[in-house]
Length: 360
Ligand code: ATP
Image: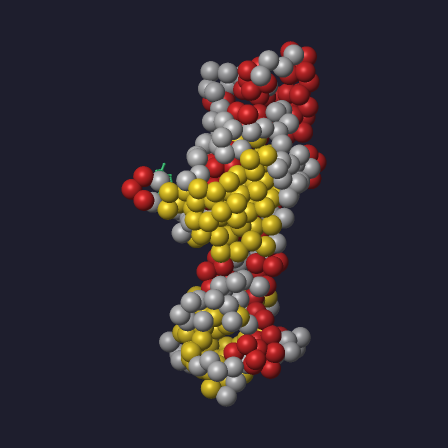
C-alpha cells in the first residue's frame, strides 16, 4: 500500500477556470481520506489528478514516494470507482471484474481466484453470470467496487460512488465500504459532496470550496474546531446557526438575543465589537432540561415549525427577527406558536470575524 502526496498542485482549465489552487494534501498509508465540498469546489478534479486523468497545471503528485506527473493512469497502480459504475454492458459480472486482469495478462487461474475472492467479500457470488442490466443499482455498485478490488491496487479512488443509490442503500453501502477499508487496509481517497458521508467514513477529511482547501482534519476536529464560518456551516446537520451581532461588556447582542460570553473567550475576543456568533442546533436546549449545561444563556423564542424525527425533534424558531434551528430531545413537546425558554450552551459557542469569516 502507499501514501499519496499532492504538493502545491494547481489546475487551470481552458479560459482560465481555476479548478484547484495550491493544493497540499498528504494521504497516509492505509488512510481513508475524504474530499468534500459543494458542487464545483474542485474535488473531482483533485481526484482525477491523482488518477492521472487530468494533468496538473503546476505542482507535483506522488504515489508511494514516486513522482507520477508523467506516469499514465494505467501505470499508477490505482483503481478508480466512478459514480456511474462504468461497467461494460455486454460483459457478465465475472467478465467485468476479470477484464482489467486479462488486459494485464494475469494467468487464468489467478484471475478466477481473485474474482471469486472479491465476489465473496462483496456478497455477489450469485451474480457472476449476469449482465449489468439485470442488476440493481446497489449490485452494480458492488461489481464496480469488485473490479477495483481484484486489481489489488496501491490506492483506491472513489468519485461519488454512492450518489446514484437511494438513501437507505447509500447508508448500507457506506458501512460496507468502511468495512472493506478495514479489511483491505488500503489507502483510499473518496470524493463526496455529502458531509454525513465524509464525517462517518473519513479518517481525515479535506474540506474544499472554490478550488481552495479550507481545512484538513479528522471528523471531530472539523466539528469542534472549524477554521472558518464556511467549514463550521458545512460540517454538521442541521447546519450551525449564525448570528451577526455586537459585543458589549462581554455580552453578545443581536436583535432579540442577549447572551453572556464565557470567560474562556474573552481574551480571543478582546477589542472586538462586531462578530458572528455560531451555535449548533444540538447546543440549544429547553431551559427545563438544561441542568448539565455550565455556561447557560437564556433566550426566549417562538416555534415556527416543529419536525418530529422519532428520536429527536427539530425546532425552527425565531427570537426577535432572528431565525434559528434547535435539535432537542422528544420530551420537549413543542408546538407551532409556543414560546419557549431556551438555553444556549455558550461553552460550545463559536465566534467568527464578520469580514474574513475566520474563527476567532
Ligand atoms: P461536482 O460535485 O459538481 O462534481 P466538483 O467539486 O467535483 O463538483 P470539479 O468537477 O472538480 O468540481 O470542477 C471544478 C471546477 O472546474 C468547476 O468550476 C468546473 O466547472 C471546472 N471544470 C471541471 N472540469 C472541467 C473541464 N474539463 N474544462 C473546463 N472546466 C472544468
